[in-house]
Length: 65
Image (tube, rainbow, N blue to C red; front, top):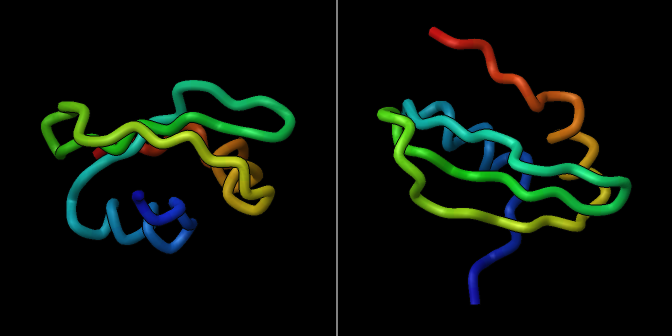
């Protein structure tokens, strides 16, 4: 079983040069893709922790470099 995705893990993912993108977000859940720096999908996560869903909703568009 994979550990739950956290805000800290998302931020760390970006610090290492990778990207993530929100696939879907609803009132109580979200689906997010963790991608390599090339944009290739590495992992897909469904999250339901309210703090993470809110973060993903607020940060759904990451600035491009």
